[in-house]
Image 1 (cartoon, rainbow, N blue to C red):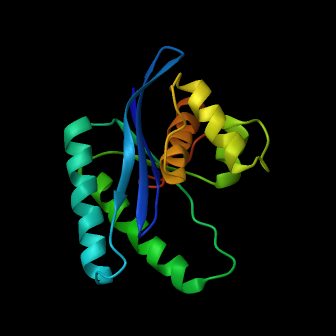
Image 2: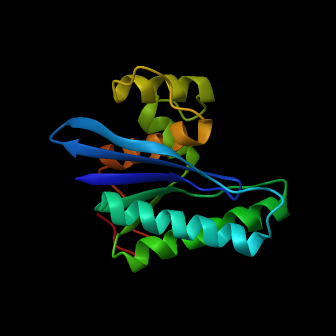
Length: 166
């Protein structure tokens, strides 16, 4: 099964593509989509959408895992990231790829075994679980790989595009 994990954002969208072969996880590609701060928000959203569409077409994942948004401070940031997340989910839906969401707590529990794990612990475990030589950078990339790993290990998942529980 090929899985793409996404850490949504407006400035940086982290992505990580892994293959699950039996119980083995094999990294295929990972990185980030960046947009420039001086660019208009509609153009940034289009850039994210276009880049995501290209990634999905090139790597043809069977499923997408995406981090669920939780903001308690900056509402403006929450709206911008929510819009970016929306165009990512739209790209997946248009490609016929089911979308599953995970909270940061679920990802930390799946990767580290502790929901209050620090970012450094998460990054190190992603490196170990995928047998990578170096910790993926930036943080958004490591987080996206963490989401993909979480999906690979999940027995109960919520499919947000179809509302199906497995």
